[in-house]
Length: 607
Image (tube, rainbow, N blue to C red; front, top):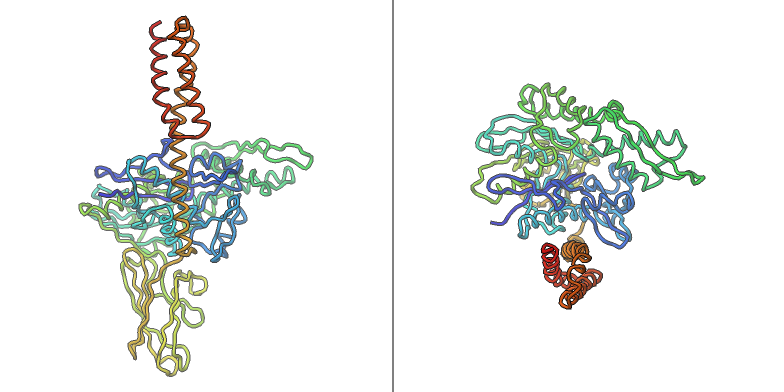
């Protein structure tokens, strides 16, 4: 059976998991880490770096290193969130050809799904290396509050990475699957998911026999650890400005160093009361004098800096409980998910609101990927008895006269579902009507997300309000929205399958898929060479360490001198192959190097 991997495509870190022998497990990367930074960089030589290697060079290559791309995926250029990112990021964000968002790295502009695809491809490689076979199918998680465009952009990223994304599921739902998997529990739980870039709260009923039913979900796709980091950065920048009258934000490298220091300080303050931020030579003054930044940040100050952000999550929890028509005491367990839930103040805020100590029994960084893997196994294995009933996170409807949003499918409706509503014409003798499909919660339609539009023509001429149009909305289990409009007098009908847009055309996606395949081939070749080179260099170093002793022992005989010369020739050939970056030649020399090393060890052992 083809393996399906589960991927948590996170803002700060990403994680990949698989179900093996009936149990979900996270797959570690080459460095042995279970999570990989969601960072991408392009070096001066034009080489792509992903994950830990990208993070390690972020300070010296700040302008060409991307972090938190997930906060931009599926967004329009003119959105306030994009404007915020443009003002605060150390890399360059520019407008794309379809009013979408592009990121400029070196001499090329990349779409956000393309950047996310590089991270997904890294997850695919980690899984393939572990399983020893190709992987083409995945379940990928997204924040519960993502709209359809953001979800489609994530699917496009998967396609560019060479993955068939068989299902997109919500992160809190995935966490609940992992929490309840194999436990046969019957509970109403709240999943409080505060990650690096997004916040979600979902309330679910877990029933016997593996039924997971989402009752209500809400969140904020631009609220997370990144914002708490930003508050620390502001505090550091302001203090430095007061002391030296210099704005550190003007220097991209200084900004990246501040970001690193803020994230580190935030993490440390989860276990200590205060920490020192010490950044020597952060910037030079106008008199070429090197200036240093040194400040002590206390847990109390951090809590004051982030108090309103934490309170915002509590307000969303309050509203979600109301939407679910539940009281606090009806929630039997509160599960904490996401790296930010390690912060003591967040834990106490959750405990204070729900009036119970939260459950810390799941791993906040791994539980979402594990849940995605469980869902992947359930979709491909008939023996898996699990039913997942999710909801639509945003209301769906149409724009009516005067830019009013008329809701047909309310927020938190269980999918699949369909709803109908009858509308009438708004003008005398109107022969056509434009159906504008929207997603959102605002009564003003222009403030919501446009999903698609179509025109129903051929209406009979009649006074306004007398021609009745029946509009039907339908959502299937995959979240695909279909809308139909029908003239009840004539039976004329027009419909549309709403395919959300990531801002990319099919041709662009095809070109990106091809570029991604080429990069993967180059990368595999490069990794193959790197592995052979490391092995050869290790043996060469051992041989050279033994050379003086061996020469001393065998130099008196002709046979010994001949063996030494041959050994030197093998070492020289190996060095030449490494210098030429010739993988085949390096591998060819490995046999000779191994034999020489064995012989040298034998000679030394006999004395």
